[in-house]
Length: 166
Length: 427
Ligand code: SF4
Image 1 (cartoon, rainbow over the protein chains, first blue to last red):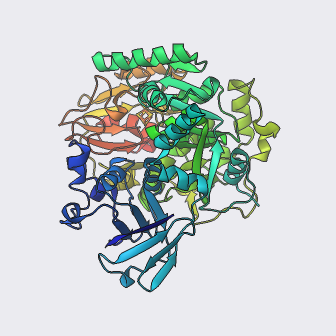
Image 2: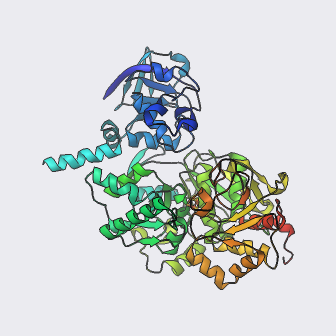
């Protein structure tokens, strides 16, 4: 599976409070998403488009275990996040909620510009941007299937329905 | 060359060839939920997925958060839990006996080598028994309930070496606060920690549980301790009928030499002193005597990490024959009915009562602000619990300091941070 989208580029240490700010946590998921990443990019929620990809540095999603950090990105239509490294619990939540997150330790953000078109090859685990390409982690098939189905619950749902149809 | 973690993951996944950062699907030996993370969240998700519980005998349900039920919401949670237990015919159901992480091993459900998940962030506690144990969220738990499996990214097994032996009035809580203060709450970067070294052999099982429990505060997925003679003794007493995991002797579940990777850490127990963490993070930990002390209004001895029998013993030693300061209230919530009963038999409850303590039920109680007792805006609390995040124990204006149960008891006597080593003379 291949995925093409515009790139948003962020640095290191984007934490769960930047993704889902604590002071807006009582709002609805949609309203909370409108504040996603505003602390570092005020126009993010208003200018993001469905299919956009986030590229970032170390420890993306570090912080609390709140699933809203993932949910907000999904609501805004982000199709994948590629970062040098992730907060472990964030990446867990992301896969389970159906958001592709691949770590790419060699990613060189200085070679990337905002809104460059990037291509992500899931199976091979490769990210292309212009003339550059980087090796990302390769996910096993069972995880890729789960993420493509929209996360753990949707995946199990689909399996149950498939059984019923037989 | 495998670490204890890799041995457990290998068995659970049926794979022998894997590296750090690879993804595996693992079979869960035992899952645990409490009343907050349990049936009220699981039942609707199972229904949505048209799935049944994977194995009713491999899900333990222990109620501790919303008990005793004191309002309509908590009564409803209790009802939903009981209905589920009845409908699914759950065998391992322990209602209102104590805090899940403490009750679970007391019921003999753990055995070294197990792959265990719990619907609570301190599910790492079971690591003290040589299990790979970690906390998961509602979505993950629904997946486990439906399939009995869970995916995992193979962690590094990072070594935490404890050298020497704890000195007088210094405890496991001080070890973990020392690490929190030195390395912060992202020390482990969601990798696995293994506590080892000569110092481990000097710690009782309940002290080890404190280390594994608060591995969560160090950002670890799990905090494991390989089984030894002390583990065997405990298991013989509490789990006489357990079956050995994979039929292997407990001694199999050890790390091979040179199997650790990533950063390693060391705590010298010989020179360690009592620690305290200032509001609002465990990472604000420093030697107790390095802090400027506030005037405390409440001293709380409670929680899975701070009110087990060994914790109650340590506190009672400080409080014996003394009176708490008039400026402070001392609240004690033993971690389980079994610990409370043992404390009563040893005369500890009487010591607490005579010192002026008030008792709360054997539940999570004030630790996370559940229940009727909560901190008010003006309260400054010293607590044996695991976390002192802003507002966790009640009003957002309240302040919480963390320390060992002995140090909390010492503060109860004076109203201020007090080195427990200066209070007891019967060395
Ligand atoms: S006592 Fe506190 S830390 Fe332990 S399970 Fe209960 S709420 Fe969590």
